[in-house]
Length: 144
Ligand code: 4NP
Image (tube, rainbow, N blue to C red; front, side):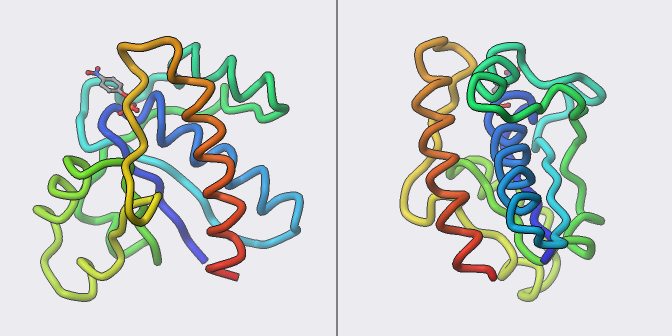
C-alpha cells in the first residue's frame, strides 16, 4: 500500500498525517510506503512547521526529518491512495488528474469532514494532531 497525504503547504497537516501513519505502520510492521506533498509550492524543501514538529514530538512521533514537496501529476502513478485534508486540496489535486483511475485514488482524509488548517491558529495543532492520529488508526484497518 502506497499512501500520499496532501495539504496546501505540506508543512502543517500532511506532515503530521505522514509521520503518524508511518509511526503506526512501523509499529504494526506493515511494509507500506507513506509520503506527503503540498498543492502549493512555497515551502518546497522546508522542514515541517515547528508547531507540527513540537506536537508530534510530544506524542513520540519524530517528523523533523521530513522535507516539503510539491504535488505534481506524476505522483498519481506512484500512489494507491491520495488523501487530502480539505475541499480546496481535493479540487486542486483533481484538476491534475487525467483519468478516472487517477481520480478514484483521491479522497478526503477524514472521508466526510475536513482537517482544519492550523497555520494561523496555534491552538489548532493539538486537536489536529488528535483527529489525524485517530483517523490514521482507522485507515490502517480499512486499508489492511
Ligand atoms: P498546511 O498549512 O497546508 O497544513 O501545510 C499551511 C501552511 C502554509 C500556508 C498555508 C497553510 N501558507 O500559506 O504558507
